Length: 315
Image (cartoon, rainbow, N blue to C red):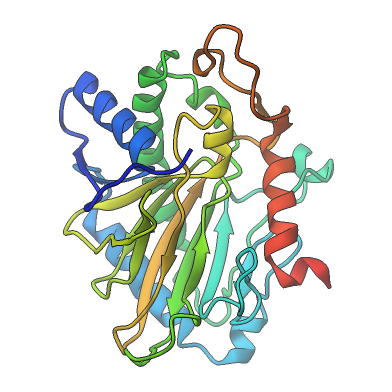
């Protein structure tokens, strides 16, 4: 489903009544696919510490960052040139470090070889403060994700805990991202992140003050989604669009860092348990309508999308 025309991404206060919040999220998810949330409850100190340690990590020597290079479980450092969106002319101009739910090698799902599950790759020798900072961030923003999904469940006519029951051991991934400075006159073909839609369920994004996030509306225009004080950006991913038979819109977006200075952001790609069946929700079908997508699972779908997007998976 294409996004509706809009000139500004809506802002939703999670401190409003549950019914009002559910209605506002539902409208934004169906018409835009993007919205800001305020009243999110994530402590300022947790956010500030995550940003401070992110900057420290990306300032490390290349050898230190490459010592925790991305693995087959999609945990670790991704250097410039390793990520390329769809048919983009060039790879994304960014570095990132991916972390997720910390699971030991002895965990039954890890032993079973389920995709994208296992321990993180922390640079404890070079930057021991990164692990606690990002672990606290992952937990706090994950709790925010549950608040948003609970309201979505109600809006979709489901039990409030529908999504929570499918997030016991989530395939959620955090990503700290560094976009190096680009001259303001740089060609648009060199994007921080090329135009794409996210792969998973929902994404919760914190941006620094630099700006550069843009969202495409139905008319094909790119609309700025600038940083707002005390707000997270939330957007619908392809997995949730598929789950809702495209009732919820997964909207193309990109990052163009024209500021001439470094840009940092932190994303949490908040996806359900690896074995969660992704089949069209009954309430998202009209009488006699067939689902638009065949059944899959969260893990199979996300792993297949990664295989196409990341160079390390083709080595």
